[in-house]
Image (cartoon, rainbow, N blue to C red):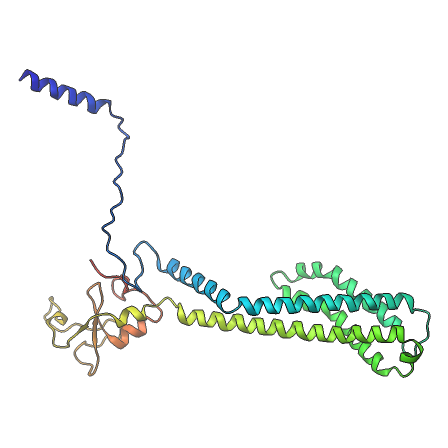
Length: 294
C-alpha cells in the first residue's frame, strides 16, 4: 500500500510540473479519401477553384496559342518602329539641309508643323492621362489627333507637288517617305490593336463557357432513380416528393429521369442540369453537387 501511495504522489507531482499551455498536436493523417476527377476539394471554395482553373487555362492558352505569334508580331512591330525612326531621322536631316532650296509646295513648313505636333503629343500625353483616368486608349487617340491632321495636310501637299521633286528632291523624297511610313505605321498599329481586342474578347468568352461556376459534368455522373422507387416517398405524408426546382411532382412528368444528389435530394434531370449551368450546389441544402456525401 505504501509503495502504491508513493507512485500516486510521483504521478501527481509530475502532472503539476507540466506547463498548462502544452498542447499535443496530432500528426495529419493520410487516410483521407482520394478525390475523384472533376470533384472539388472540401477545403477549397468554389470561387477559389474557378479562379485557379481560369488562371491555369489562361497560362496554357498564352503559352500554347499566343507565344509564337506574339513573338513574331512583337519582332515585326519592333523592326517597323526602327525603320520608321530611320525614315524620320532622314526627314529631319533633309529639313535642316534643304531649307533654302525652292519648292512649289511648302513642304518645309509641313515638316516644321510635323515636328511641333509630335513634340506637342509627347508633352500633352501625361496631361491627357490625368484627364482620362483609367482610359489610356482615349488619351492616346486624343493626343494623336494633331499628328493625324498634319499627316493629312502633308498627303495633300505631296500629291499637289508639280516641280518640287525636280527643284528640291532632297526635301521632296524624304518628306514623301515620311508621310508614307506614317500611314503604314498608323494602319498597322490600328489593325494590331483591333485584332488584339477581338482576340481578348473571344478568349474571355471561351473562358466563360468553359469555366462558368457550374457542375454540369458532375450532374451527368449522378445515379438515376426509378419513378417507382420507394426512395421518392416522403416519410412524413407518404406521398411522392416534388422537384423543388420546377415544383412538379417527381412521378407526374413523363419521360423525365430522376437524379439523386450526393446530399440525398431528388430532382428531374433537366431541372438539375439547368440549375447547375450557373450553380455548383444543391438547391435545397447548398451542399456541393460534385462532392460525395459522407
